[in-house]
Length: 343
Picture 1: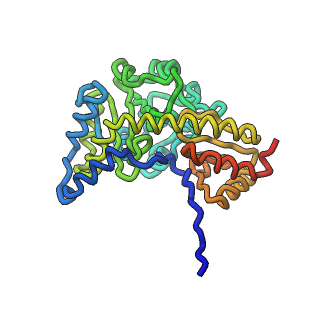
Picture 2: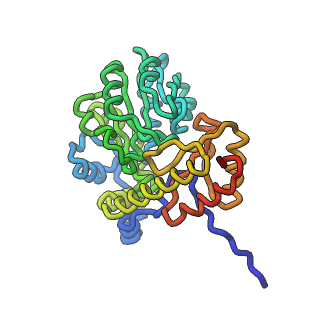
Picture 3: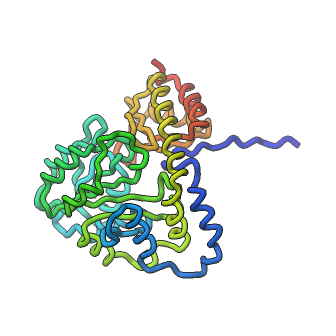
């Protein structure tokens, strides 16, 4: 009896680490799986201390959360009062505006400049009622960065009562030397908040671990509004091991850099409009929604999953996670079959 052969699905829609989880994290979880009957720490003091040692900063400046969405939820829900507002770029991580909508927060959308976050537009939208500005850096979904000079210019311009959140979920993939040293800038600006996650390069998206670094007063506010036990025992064990797995991070970063360069170069040769990325994904934009959809259909037929950008603010683009180098040619070949992008 003949059996159908199911072709491998290449999932490139959620910017996950395609190498899987850190091997050290995986081993640590397996070694401690008999602890699942135990409650975790109410507010994850173990990870707070470990992140403190890893970053070389005081534990009083660290807030551990169940993925960055938990910290964003707390800030948008509790830091912004009625009559105050939030500023985010018009094309950025969709969770920001979804959370703002849930909590009925006035949201102002700053303009993009050639798919870059426009700092001047943020400044123009900012007033004494602006309580929170969120910048994804690198920006999800465009992959562009705000450099240190522009971030400093923003911090020097906005009111001291306005919190500026630098969401650096993808920072480990950045190769540009002008990327901000946000940890150092935190010492100068008490209204600056840095976010990091274990969902991307560390390969722990399913376990939900992240952290914020900020002035002690901000950390106290975040802790006050956090429910107990949000970071699970398994997540704590995995993150504790993953942060020590330097070999895995180096391999993930290097493979991503090579595959990203190859994919960008080949896509441009095929006639696609590509935004130069500093992350583990690439933004491809088109002249029309129909053209975009046609390319997505071609990829879907080849079992390549990508993410349309309508919820992010652009109905003429899609985002594709950088595949492992061994799969890059499969993606290039699939995109090469689309006739509308040919030169």
